[in-house]
Image (cartoon, rainbow, N blue to C red; front, side):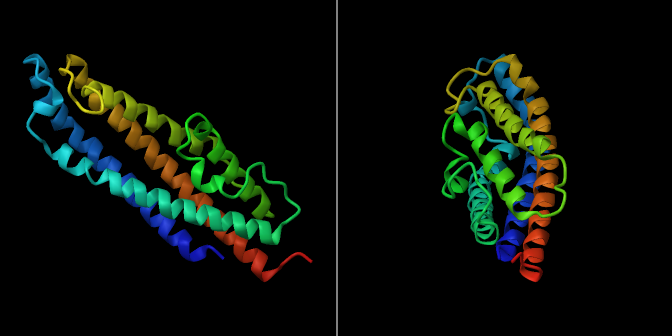
Length: 206
């Protein structure tokens, strides 16, 4: 049963949410520095590093850890669902538990299908509500990140900063808020499935 990995998936998800809140807090003084640089026509790459820049470096390994541990739990949960409820028809093959998150276009809904099917195949009781909200909380922060990237001159930060960079914290805070809500729902779903998996082990269906 994937209960051991479930604890790790919960841990990295919470750590990721906490880091997004920290970045939202640090984006306020950072935006002030960037706004001053915008008035001088300076590009992001030429601006002095601020606390936000140092902390954002942690986002890359933490995002990777969240992906690896979360997908491992989801894949094991899919394997468990196949074993205890082979009659259930999943819309996607098990490998999509890993690859659906980063393939362009299909990443907009394939992960949702994977999670939804694993839940329906595993939980014998009424499923908790809020999965649509969880998925929105996953997608919208990605859009916010795209916007903030453009506000600082693209991925390389080579374009001159514009006064619009003052709005950076608004998108950072929106992303942080949605990530926290999404994290809460994700943790609730992991616990829901863990409980359902234990029920299968205690009272398997003949």
